[in-house]
Length: 235
Ligand SMILES: [Zn+2]
Image 1: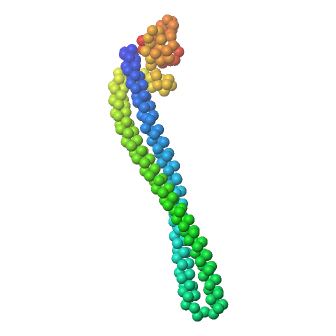
Image 2: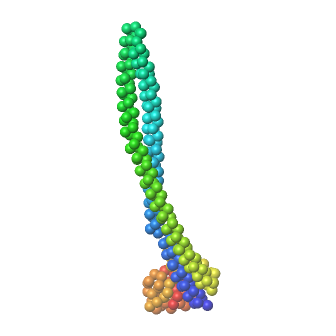
Image 3: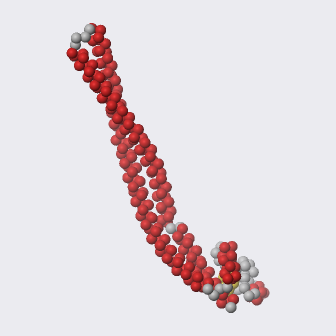
């Protein structure tokens, strides 16, 4: 009775090892590492895009403000010049107005230079932002493709896992509950291998030899266990 159960457990062990390998494969797909890498790159790009957007917005606001100031200056200059050309002012007034116009010309020149230098910075800033957006879109595409691949592989692995679990359930049917408990406990403490085949005087679990006396003692037991590693043994 127990001998048959132990042989059944050997089948269970084989299935469990296959399940372990499938679970390991599920968690270590190369696409998962590639996805993580793409995700990190995307996060970095998003942070860079935030900075680029802020810089561009500041630059655009400054540009608009300076253009507004330039317009006001132009119209003031226009008024003053019209007044000068119209004449009819006293000598002192004319001199005052002339100096004022001269000063406004200077201010306009400085402001025009500022607007021009801003214009020169605007285009590269817009290009930089667009380039980051294009790179982020490419990474998003990469992520979507990887996600699709991972889902497909997981679907396949999960189907295989379900088949193995089903077979394990069937293999466990004839095994008594306390033996299953012992098996599961040994699986947890013995790196997943609870039971081994005893062949050519060697334990299939720890690969150590048992002396004839140890063999006799081991297999006199209803549930034979290796004297070295305490795993279950099937002769
Ligand atoms: Zn052993």
